[in-house]
Length: 174
View 1 (cartoon, rainbow, N blue to C red):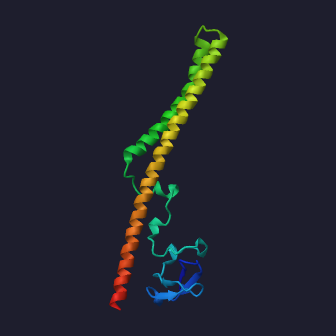
View 2: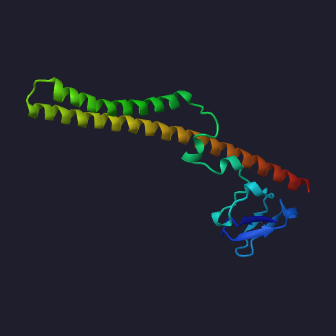
View 3: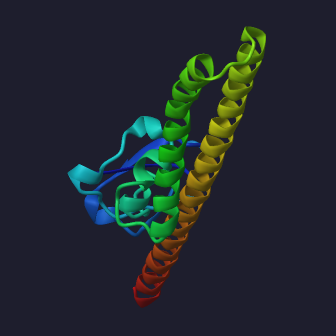
């Protein structure tokens, strides 16, 4: 049994497996629909998703930041290394603050109020530098995710167009 939904009114519909590729009318709104090919059990989707995903390749159904990072090797290895280095630099800068603070508190002959001012200045400076580094890191990560998702979307559109072209050619042959 093939399960799909109307693209106009989202009514869940069913058709026999042999009805794949045929055109049917939605009983609710009358929209003409193409019955999609059957989906194997491991790629089936929930009826509550609200859309007909049967023609979209399985690998492109789960786009997004979480799924895009580990599926296949990055096309931008230098950017991945840069992100890692930025995060390591933020950790190093965070670790330097207490060391600098101890040095200023113990190793200088300044007045206590001057020491406090310098320590506070270091704290604020380190905080701003860390914030800036992490912002750039996340910005670069977002650009990488956008590039990957754009590529996956383009691939799914191409696959969908070729599948529809094949189905149209099959209908012409009938």
